[in-house]
Length: 71
Image 1 (tube, rainbow, N blue to C red):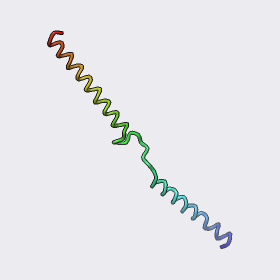
Image 2: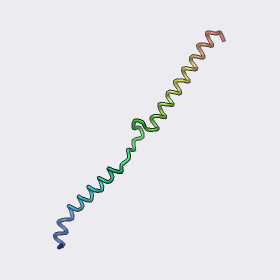
Image 3: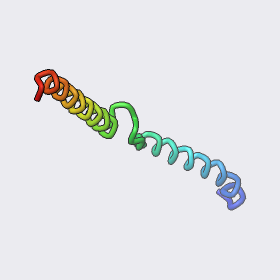
Image 4: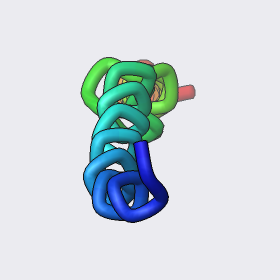
């Protein structure tokens, strides 16, 4: 193969190599969005909100009961 033929094939080879690299990256890509549904951060946030709401409800309920009993 002459230098001219190699020079003519080079752009096609570069395009093929880039396409292969992008394909490999796409296959290996792991979603990095921390707020994706089901992620640990979202579940932990909802759990914290639920616990805080339960604590607030218990405090309100105990206050109401104590006032009703006259304490």
